[in-house]
Amino acid sequence: MPHWLQLMAESLPSLLWAGLIFTIPLTLLSFAFGLILGLITAIARLFGPAPVTAIARFYVWVIRGTPLLVQLFVIFYGLPSIGILLDAFPAALIGFTLNIGAYSSEIIRAVISSVPKGQWEAAYSIGMSWRQAMSRTIMPQAARVAVPPLSNTFISLVKDTSLAAAITVPELFQAAQRIVATTYEPLILYIEAALVYLVLSSVLSQLQVRLERRFARYGGMLEANA
Image (cartoon, rainbow, N blue to C red; front, side, top):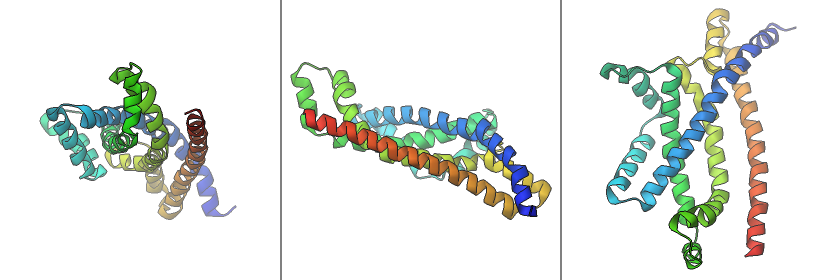
C-alpha cells in the first residue's frame, strides 16, 4: 500500500470521530439556535416597534459586516479581558449562532415579505388573529420559498465550522492539524480533511434537492386547492 494511502487510512477514524463528536453537533446546534434567533430578528424588523427594529437592524449590520473569524476571536479571546470566560465549544456555538441568526434573518425577512398582502387580508377576513395568520397562512408559504437559501446556509455552516479550530475546538480540521504536527504530512492530511468536508457537503446537497422537491409538490397541492 502506498505511504500516502496508508496514512489517510490510519488517520481517517480520528477525523471522522472529531467530526461526529464536535463538527456535527456544533453545526446542528448552531443552525437550530441561529434559525430561532433569525426568526425573532426578522419578525422584530418587520413588525416590531421602532426601538426594537433599530436594535435588530444594528445586530444584523454588525454581524454581516465583520468576518466570522474575528467574531469568534472576540468571543473566545476578547471577552476574558472583561471577566467573561467561555470554554472553546460554547464560545464557538455562540459565535456561529449569532452569525447564522443574522444571515438567516435576512432570508426569513425576505420570504415573509414575498407573501402577497392578499394572504394577510384573506386570513383576517375569516377571523384569524395576527398570530394565527402568521403561523397558519404566512409561514407555511414562506417556508417553501426559504428552503433553498436556508439549505445553502446550512451547507456553508458545515464548512465554516473549520474556523472553530482557531479557538481550539477539537473538531475535524483541528484533528487534521494535530495529525500533521506528528506526521509532517500537511498535503495529504489537509486533502483528506477537504475530502471529508466534500462528502458531507455532497450528501447534504442531495438531501437539499429531495427536500426542495417535496416542498415543491406541497406547493403545487396548495395551488391546486386554492
